[in-house]
Length: 633
Image (cartoon, rainbow, N blue to C red; front, side, top):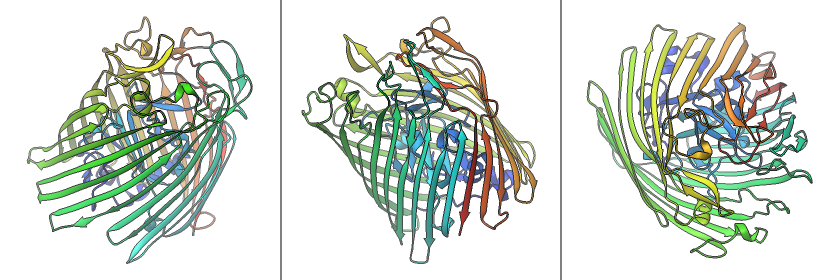
């Protein structure tokens, strides 16, 4: 997958010391692969800094992403949550998530396990809240989440952190980070171990059977992240051993007790940044991933498949002048799936490939030009992918952006695709990629040195969406006709020294859904699980030297889903409010303490299934009191 340009990586950004203007002018690379100001980059982009994450008291990546108005979580199967983007169910390969440049979508079903990430090691999150396939390919149909952990330069020594919660998700974790940067090179090592639970409430399936989730919904992340660089060459190794326990399974709950599902993986990458001249540079890289996603060794759903991906890529950057630059490149990956002996016969055979696994290849070529026309910036690009099984996909993107003093404007047209995964192909060798066409408009105005307003309009149409279904009592995936959403959003940023408030709002509906398992009978403008309206607040109020009070909240309007009796129900509006008290550099310098409460009013929120798949609402954590401590030395 494409990464950031060789010399355009954004520097460490301290939100507490920055003015509103500096916050708005932070440079991002996620949408363009070269550093561009947030208000000019060719995408509707949100940047979440380390300061914001720490001030909010977030315990997990789900806590952080829930504060993005365009994102909402739903339940899939076997205790795993998936993401909705602007009201579209985006699980299984429709959102790309990168952690230090490594693609965390597992390649059997293309899902993401959002509970595995140590947010206390995060430096910055850059999010494209719309299509990104023209840059990143077949996992980036609806959104891109690019997460960078703390660099050796930023760490400059050691950091310890730990957290403990009482109630709610019963959070407990600890981590250690070390980093050093010198004249000849740099190195970092980051380790993490955690435990929590999905919820301590009670789950009831559609047949009326129920169980207490405490002790039956454990989440166990652990990881080791090593990085080294010398001159223009860098290397990274990540070992990640996330597992979860669940009883809700697929439809009816497991009566004999919980079961363990594991997601071990390994990443290794080497890349270079080679300057050929003052205007031309190259970034070659090679990476390897090996995983065993959804591994389960029991009688309920025995599943054991090892998959690997070897990827090669090179990108060329050419700066023609201060008003024009270009990039072009190519990528190749080779996927290999091996079936272990535990796997049931029903999940084993790869039709038309080989009995013990599958092998696929993909070639991709991409290019982009950025032009300063004076009256506006024009960014145009295209990506071509050819897969050895399902064939070719071609997706263009054109964006016009402009920053006039305090006013900015963006108009973006893009196409994107969702690549069929290995298991999609196994269950339906005739499956085709789904394709999205999106139009986005955004405008913003800095009303003063402390206040900024923004608004956006969007329309996304997804053609031939890939949907799991059952045909003649056999599980399969097939292409449906179309689905999609349209809507608008607003944002307000206020910042004056340590006082900060970010308010976001999104409205979405559908007028083009033709997927029956997504629909809400009698309510044609609604899609299952996701609200028409979402309102978010993330704020910080300084109380004294080093002490701040940080309220955050998420409000969603009513949602539709299938309840405990199997009937379609209305789930009323909910507000989840959080409060975090943060003390920095007191009583010791470089010590940070957080005391917070998540879901203060016990909102009784549940994750709904965004398709008619027979899964009942999955209870979210209830109120939790937590303490976090971090010390750098």
